[in-house]
Length: 449
Ligand SMILES: NC(=O)C1=CN([C@@H]2O[C@H](COP(=O)(O)OP(=O)(O)OC[C@H]3O[C@@H](n4cnc5c(N)ncnc54)[C@H](O)[C@@H]3O)[C@@H](O)[C@H]2O)C=CC1
Ligand SMILES: O=C(O)[C@H]1O[C@H](OP(=O)(O)OP(=O)(O)OC[C@H]2O[C@@H](n3ccc(=O)[nH]c3=O)[C@H](O)[C@@H]2O)[C@H](O)[C@@H](O)[C@@H]1O
View 1 (tube, rainbow, N blue to C red):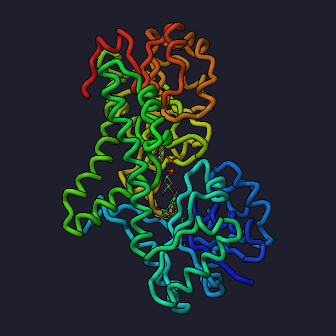
View 2 (tube, rainbow, N blue to C red):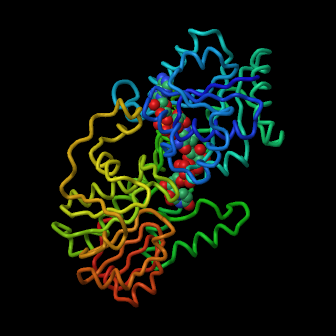
View 3 (cartoon, protein in one colour):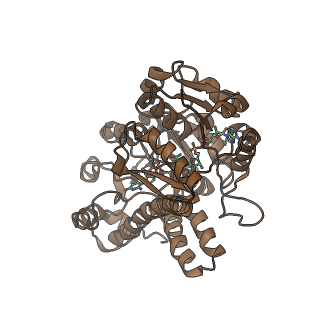
């Protein structure tokens, strides 16, 4: 029986290996991790990550050909194929700080594998998106395998290809050299993030001119060369990889003396940071240029809907900005715990991307922040509501009821174009929605761009 071992039982390792186990019943899959609590959770009824469809897939194969374990050495030694899916944070110190990938965890995994025997190295970047990970893994646009152009390299590529060939059509399994595979991963994320920064840059211009960014996005998206996906204006992209991968791309460009290319990609991140601070400035300036002591309800903290992941979520920067202006925040997210939110607001930039047990201990709770169990509780007595994640439930809220319970004038700042702007204005709200035509109140209160 072919045996696979995956080092790293996180957002990528867990779902990817569970899908391999489902699609390849003849292969035994072990997912190993240094985090005991994470492995315990994978072996329990409460998986360590929230991902639609994941529970069913894990339950189907766990204990049959899918195992979660902390016995790393044994499973690596027994495996025919070893995947490495560990943290690759952005370096915070030394050479390349703030840009280069910190390969500490990767290197320690590689050294451990090397103790066992010599193996051929492949690059097999994963393209799943959180919230749709299981669907993406079942039906990928492509699988990418990079290998050395030697006979051993080609043989290793074929071995891995035969695993994916259990369910992925052959023409969707792309084989390249190692650098092509590595750069394709960074380029794919950079291109996707660039589309969001492009539409977000347009959202600022739409607000200034009276255009509607959703109409502009639709109009350009119907051009088959542009296409309709990834053109939703937002308060800013988040997630564990877009920023990290672009920074890494920038670093690699700089190492190769390509300053102009590096500067081009850096701009994607600059626009994203601008979008977040523009949102905070808009909230503060609309509310008489101060939110000191005011209650602001934050609806949504995850970096996108259908995930409990908060890594690099725009909500962190927005909340920190409002706290900096002395607001009192009442936060609700259907999937993110209070402990996680308090931890995120206390961590420094890039500190989050380390195994949980190596992160600094949680600081005490921020007194300006409380976390509540539903949207109505968050909005009760609030001066303003900010929508930061596009959870479906925020569309269907009874905004009439919310309005009744709020201070007046009551503001809604929609960072995700979720609410029905006209309906809310009829109720009596002053509404700001990213990239949408503004009402007279907002126009009379110009924000610092
Ligand atoms: N989250 C995502 O959607 C995607 C992430 N990636 C990349 O995949 C990699 C993993 O990402 P995630 O799964 O999101 O991270 P994660 O933080 O959820 O999981 C990483 C796991 O590796 C474990 N680990 C670290 N060092 C270890 C070692 N030496 N031995 C055993 N276990 C170790 C940690 O305890 C942790 O549980 C990163 O390089 C990331 O950039 C790639 C595609 C998508
Ligand atoms: O390498 C990774 O980690 C993954 O990064 C992204 O996946 P993910 O970050 O999970 O989620 P996305 O759906 O790409 O969303 C990223 C961010 O962009 C935002 N976004 C997305 C689309 C859009 O039109 N507008 C927009 O603001 C989302 O709200 C979210 O904050 C890529 O889509 C995956 O292909 C890749 O594997």
